[in-house]
Length: 140
Image (cartoon, rainbow, N blue to C red; front, side, top):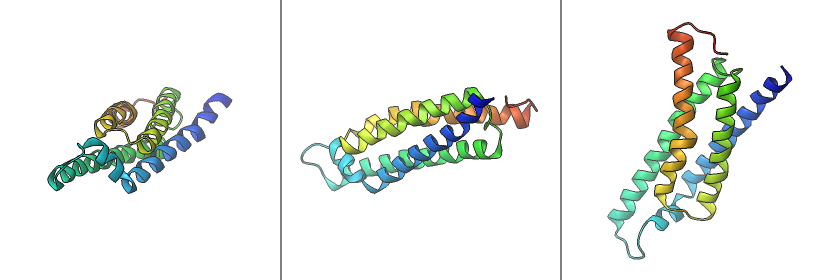
């Protein structure tokens, strides 16, 4: 039981670390948007890239809400498989998004990080919601 109890705070901290990096990215997205554009770009091109990145960041925040709801409601808090998946995904996302911010990676890279590090854990969290509330199964 000691190993599982260590997963709960680790999962919470990696979720928060990922959330902090995403919020930081909201504030400093201009340099990443410029990295996506050619040297000479129009305001319309900038606006389009900005809208795409803001949409991706908003989707990420929505998926955070799903994961935090499942975690804080207890549906997946003690599920070791979901915890390990979430820890790995959000830790990877925190590191990758830190590089995304500091190294000014292209905007298309964000979608890969989003898919593997935000969408996949949220889908598994949703599956746990369905199993617990819809099928009345134990979450662990």
